[in-house]
Length: 268
Image 1 (cartoon, rainbow, N blue to C red):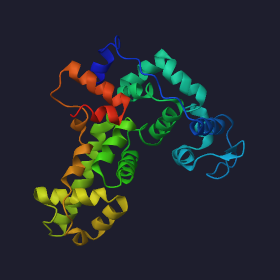
Image 2 (image 1 turned 180 degrees about the vertical axis):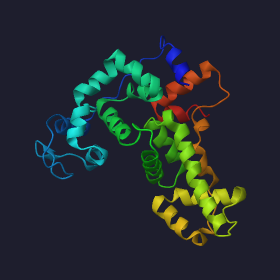
Image 3 (image 1 turned 90 degrees about the vertical axis):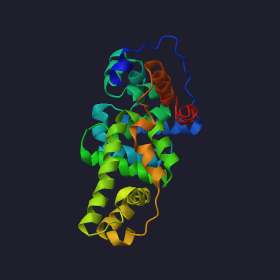
């Protein structure tokens, strides 16, 4: 897929006009940029303000979760000047297209605020290929989905996680197989065969805390109902069909870059 995207020309493609930011988004972007540029000796979720307006908790929790303010300043990841560079500098674009081609396309469809949020999300979960971050990303997706398979799709598409969909798929089946294995170790067959696998899907959809509870006491999940559909949005082929031609894939890539609504309109 990376090779295809690198070689394909964007000539003739529709130029997408980014959505304009509303006033709240402008304020939140300005506040976050203020934190990243000037820092804060006591950066907490309640202490950072710009013009006496508190920085939104969701944005700050992304900033402060994996790296402190000073670290973010050093890498200049998401200040406004770096955002401008990241969507205009050709060297940056080339490097990003190599590793995260769909993410790079997606950024061009977003305004500064939503691009900032996606950059923070990428920094939080996707920058290192380690299992701990992938685990956190997986359960973050599950938690945000509120147990709905359509929500999983929307989260993966709108946050441009399709570039790492194969890794997310692998994590899903590792989590699933772990509970199946625990069932076998306890002489249970409730998680075996297709029916059992669908029951595990339901358990996973309930979130990390519930899943861990069942792992600790597998018999308490023996009567779980099935939820087959929850597994499908974790499969890479849900987003990138394997039997499509290059021209058909180009249409899929552009829809994925545009967002969930455009992707669903393809009816893959």
